[in-house]
Length: 477
Image 1: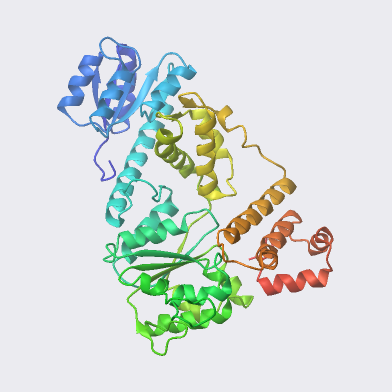
Image 2 (image 1 turned 30 degrees about the vertical axis):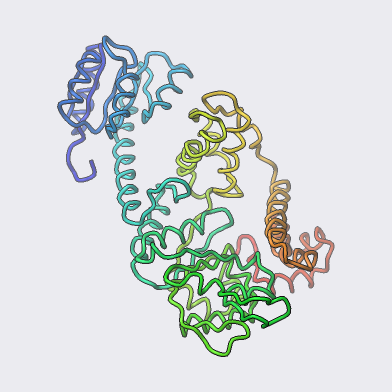
């Protein structure tokens, strides 16, 4: 429909006056219209020619609009359907949307609604076609975990993945925790000539700094106390494939220099080894921090950033792309309902509106967990707004506390995930310092005097910490 051709519309209703008004309005707007006075006539028209959109009466002689809609979906038709109903009931709305309708019209309706729905159908079909093509191009159409979204920002990410996948240039993926940075890295790998090779992920924040060098580059037997046998290391494990370096901003600065040498030379020297070994690895790195601020604060080497950020990809937080929330929510329902509920489940329109209204501080991961929780606790076939009653808008102070609690819990889980980690208390304090200061500064809107009082520290100490950590104050560029 996006190539300039007129939109082909089927109007199926047993009321001649409805068909007449719709035909006049749509043809005046430049669309091609075919009428059908019954369900059988509508099926005959749909079988003989292609339509971009069909307006189907919910009750008419022969098959109803809902029955026709179900047949179209079973046949894999991509005709967009709008249900026409005389009764604006919750049941009609749920049933129409559950079976895959774009929307529904309640009689009597305004012609502006009709034209708006045709325009919406055109845009929706164009976006879905573009997403399908991009997913085929970059290998995102597989089941299970995959990138989901069709907002302009996500479409640009899909395009970038398609362009960059064929080469071996390093990619730096940025975005808040829970936005799907590893999914982007996997998509790049799956769309690349290295797809048959290994995909190896390393979280630099989850591995104790004294073990990280050995984890990345390997070690020889006896290289240090406890090295009872040699280890290849993640670089050599990923040979012929892709190495995903997550949370690169949390890597110790002294190790960053060694990583830079590996990226420059393509050679890895294991701990305790005398000779370097060449490795064939494609690097994708990621961080939830602002990399430029990390450089300014002395936590990330500038030359390493330049080496890694040949192609940058930024994933926006979910609150900045609310149009993707319904798509993601339905994706997670489809994915987890068979396992957690034992049968298909559906989302009511009111539920989708509630989900869109939430700002998702935990991003896609929080939405995924919310869907899982609702599927486990709900017994109904349709998930209603009441199944998400645990999503309630707190005030700014409570939200700041929730953000802080989430950040601390993530760091605790990360540390406890490594049974060899020691000095957990000091390590945890170091990791939570930044989110603590950022949360309090957001709560005080950047007022350092109030923030220092809230933290119980000297204002000069706070200023020093802000500079050391490269923290940007709210409202400042």
